[in-house]
Image 1 (cartoon, one colour):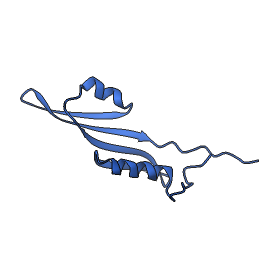
Image 2 (cartoon, rainbow, N blue to C red):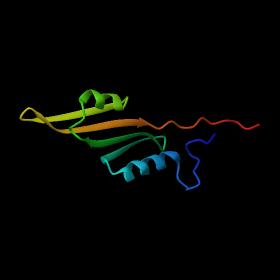
Image 3 (cartoon, rainbow, N blue to C red):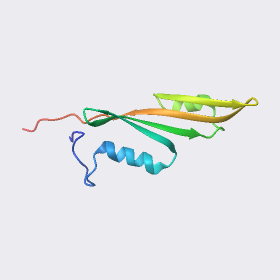
Amino acid sequence: MKNSNEQEPSGLSLSEIQVLEMIRNKSFLSIKLIIKNGEVDVIEGLERIHTGERIIDMLKQHDFQNLEIKQSNGKIVCVNRIFRKKIRPAKNTKSC
């Protein structure tokens, strides 16, 4: 298995690839990286959600998230979600 320092054939680590995928997705208003020991530990993404979705359905989409719901004249006008994705480093294995 590869550890989180090893690079893919592209020259990027797995965490760097995940960050680039989020950037290319273009649905995020902002992306925040939390670094521990010089490596990406958690990625947080802020995205605006279409107001047509049911709140209960939004809650089921991610295990770790914050929802901000804005209401005007009794109608939901804006929903922002911040979700957290933990980057799991691959376990180091010893070779024989």
